[in-house]
Image (cartoon, rainbow, N blue to C red; front, side, top):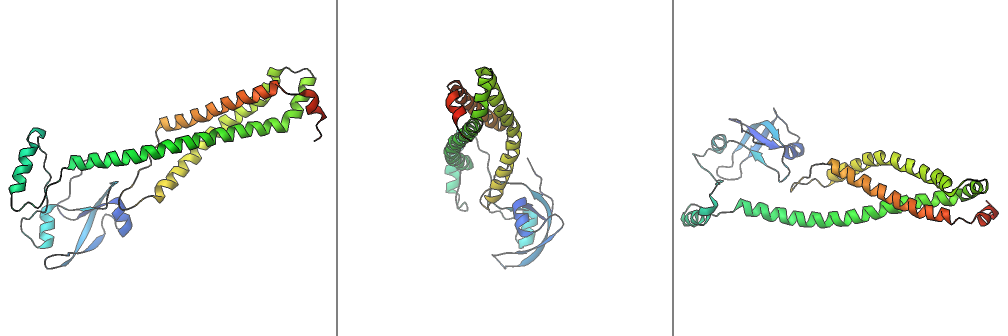
Length: 251
């Protein structure tokens, strides 16, 4: 989003404003660390949201007046034709007052490649671990339910219930609990993500909390698949249920 700087005053990033406890309308004391090292008071005009770095912005004319300088600049952003980049950089290197040049596109590309590689590797292991935990929790719940209710289910089989009917009783209950737990899991997961994001905020970078519908859908699919596999395994155990041995078991 493009932001037009005001004619006078400072525009701070929201993170810097939070660190300084300053917002629009507040007055900041600015100490200039070069030249005559003057100390000035400058009003904060607005806050802007940025996720990298901690910055403050001011119009060049107002900044030059604040520092008591003339029409001076310390850097320039150039939009260059890719076909003429080599010629432009050669000309800039020959200029005596140009201290250095940086290709912003290369810096951003390198940053994205580094971050993408590290985040994708981290995400891959997190997905594998979370999927394993989800399956373990669902399967363990199914095993515990079967263990606790095996005597009751065996009694129903003796009374004439079919395997499908007792499977429907047990697996239907597990299915209802799984479907009821998914929305609650969404809320808890969002809360954990918000807590994690809040604790990794730093001056170097901030990560916004963005949860797409596909994220919720993927999580729900993992749980449902885990429930389906667990139900299949439990159903096979129900089919092999030893009625005599179960009924002889003392509670």
